[in-house]
Length: 338
Image (cartoon, rainbow, N blue to C red; front, side):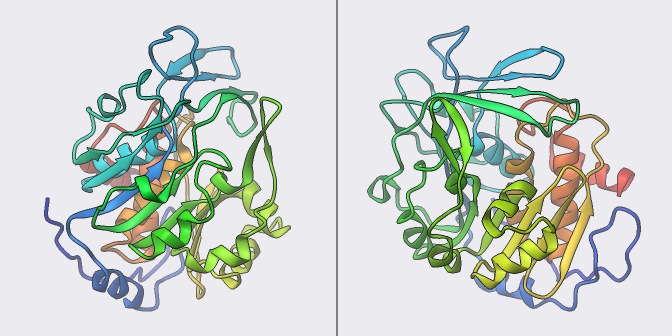
């Protein structure tokens, strides 16, 4: 699939639901057009994990809702990210890692278009269970039965890509040395959860990223949620946290929250509200947002990419599982709610 370059878009005025403030020109979009590579726009280097309960021949996540409803399904950051990118029209390569004797990684992505799967074998899979405690699904307890073997630089295939999206689930999935390695090949996008979430005594706990100041300068796109941003910076104000992360070297910071998505590029703070009508598909919110945003940034300015990503995740959260709609569905959602 060939991607046509888009003209720089500038938000001239702020209305309800629009990304704000107005962009001050097209320099950022021009940068991405200059660095555009046409073969594979995004490589997701991440984890496809699971939880063995009902079907021992499959690696599946278990998600228990606040009302006791239990769903067993394939999950993981690379899964939600890959579907979001592919179903919105972007050619995508994914490198999921799991025990390939127990899960067919290629089959897991078969319903998604434009995806090339490079299955990586691990002697163990990431096996997890999420229990949500509140209707807004903002409070959850995660337990972990096993984790994958870390990604190794030598097992990554030679893929021409514009962005490498490092989307692990827990500390150790993506070793620190993978970041400068990825930066030698493409722009680096990383979800910081893979540096902060540690598996201890069967549970998931958060610790600061000790090497953040050394490695953030390699990062073109950094994604955190509000809690993770506070762990990294000690700041509860999301805009101030984004500014601090920029000062430490990340070039473009995206912070998710249950009410909005925030982006900072060193010049302006941009925000866009989440408009989901229900939260039945809350799992995968951050993965979907980030994948949608970084793909759109290849050809669009920040306000345009932010509005698209926020509409995408709002629509996705109304249905459990990964995003399986189309770009036309997101465009229609934008027109109706933004």
